Image 1 (cartoon, rainbow, N blue to C red):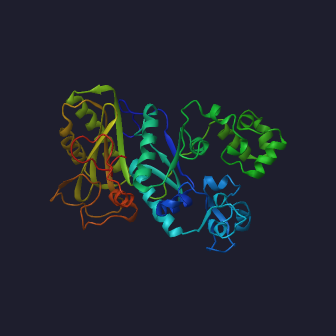
Image 2 (image 1 turned 45 degrees about the vertical axis):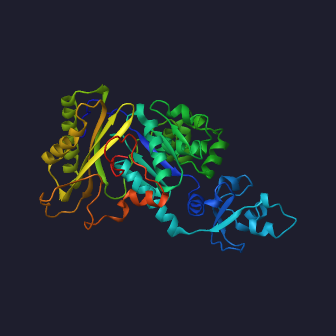
Image 3 (image 1 turned 30 degrees about the vertical axis):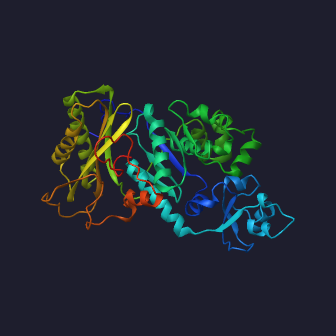
Length: 428
């Protein structure tokens, strides 16, 4: 079932995203010390307040204007950008030309990173965490290219509103293009490279923008007269093979937009979902119900093949113009029951009978991949939160977004909620 295209679904081209937080360490410091916003800020590894040892871990964009760069010794950074506290006491220095310095506090940054990753895992079934501040997402089953910009904008807004940091996002049909796209318009960037556009997107970029081309390789390519990604894409593959072996052919393929690598998550997925759009919004309830039955069957089959049980079943209903409504129902324990997925999804759908619907989705979450006793359905309970009831426990990396909202001072819910509370823990 998973390999079959559903009516209105996007199974023809992959939709991959790369999410990269902007100046992440500096953003975290500004989150807890708002007075630093807009100021030149340097975060130093091995740095202690008042000292000159250590190296620059992150420089804010304001600090970069003074020539401060990552990995630069703190002594060199101080020559370009004196500390504010020192400038205040030195009449020969201009306080407006000085900045702030803070030591790295990795535990805090990791806690903020977990908050961001929780949103990413809630938004996409397939997430590969690359580092504390970046990840790849595969949303091919749930996002069509026609709505990619709206989806990415919503993701960026949600991260900033819930966690208080800014992300740049790149979408493309390949991992390498998505990575370059996310870095192309920083800070607060959003670049979309649709299928068929990858090679043209790469062509004018410096060759080191291509995945697998580092500074040394870039210098060797320049000596061969290859300075841009377009040059690399049109280079003689035999010549590259002679110079670099198989890696030469590989970087040429990347420059041509040929990258079939899959987004492979580290560990098990947090949820499984399928979505499907109608050509035009429909008010025919039975048409919508038939589509939800198909989606429920696809999701249940996918969970069965991955040997996953689920504790939460949910739906997503998108109404014109692009209002997103989500509902979910939690079980007392994990189960694997295709009929139950269908019946719960249809029950949740009744709230939208007669409404104009342009897209629907079905998701199972709170997944359990361990072998064990299937839960009894006694005590089946409705909830608008994609998580266990109090006392049932929750994995650390699936902390509720309500906690993020409380910290960020916002009570934001998903766009388009017009009746009842829309859970933020479903679909994104």
